[in-house]
Image (tube, rainbow, N blue to C red):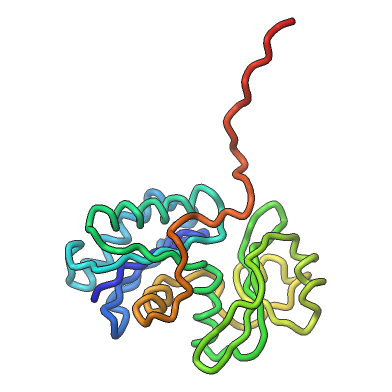
Length: 219
């Protein structure tokens, strides 16, 4: 088994390889936002660090968001293209689930939420609870203003993720990761514990750029 995992739902690009037992290589893009320029070199670097070739990959895993339109599309389209060219399955996983699983692995227990940056003073968020060695999503994902999320959760629920970093005045920031880690995504898929979905981008709202409408005829 060799799972190639990638996530572009956050400002940085994350790529990892997992052999079914452990993460062989993990690469995080150093330059925020330039997902298209970073992803292919990150994949090549991960393969080189692991001493593997692209033909060794037996499955591809991709974070499907929610996330900003352009960056998220880069990762999902790349994953689907690789899956088709290699003839291997492509597994989609909610990127918020990946952050939640990493938090659980780092010792987060009980009820908590994950919030990432949705821009426009909003966050993508979902609520979770741990159950033994698993974490379960209890609501979401949704997009909303940070203050509205805080009102829904109440003041006692810790929130992890980049959204909590950005809106600390509204959300009760808890200890945990800020962005999805492809190594965690790969481990989830390799172990069969991931809540797998179709590899389709989870936008939750329309992109900012839309095609222009038809020109009106002069009367």
